[in-house]
Amino acid sequence: MTTIADFTVITNTGEELDLAGKKGQVLLVVNTASRCGFTPQYDGLEKLHRDFADKGFEVLGFPCNQFGGQEPGDAEEIAQFCKVNFDVTFPLMEKIDVNGDDASPLFDWMKAEAPGLMGSKAIKWNFTKFLVDREGSVVKRYAPQDRPERIAKDIEKLL
Image 1: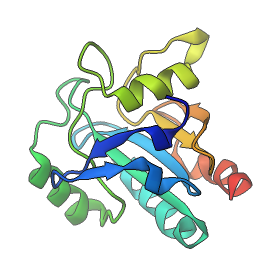
Image 2: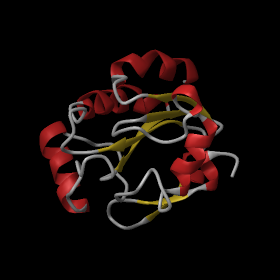
Image 3: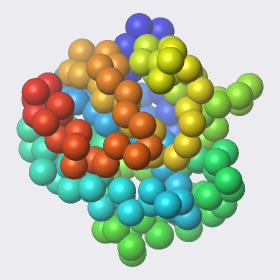
Image 4: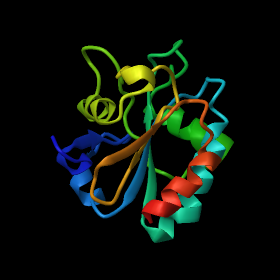
């Protein structure tokens, strides 16, 4: 696998999404959770999504329950929570694992492309973010505590 376009993921409604269709867009791929201290970042992610959508940018949310059981709901509950509490309009995918034997191949690839602190490939917590350029390459990895607002300038450079 050489770019994000080589992957297919499953949306929260159970449909396949071929990421080759996202080629030419700048993407922010995030593992999310509804009951995390970082959950308020949904507001910032949605603002980025809305502010830059017309320039070819999209946020892709991947719910994950691997960190403290902070995403226990099913796809419908997660979507409802995101809509009601944060008016999320960016696409949400099916709940996935980001670490371990059952980790999403997309996340395994992104972790290898942009290792974390001191070369660590593991995702440390919810709301780890990966910025992907128009060619489908991972440009940067952001820690959970990196607020979406701080990523706006990096997104603008790629647009």
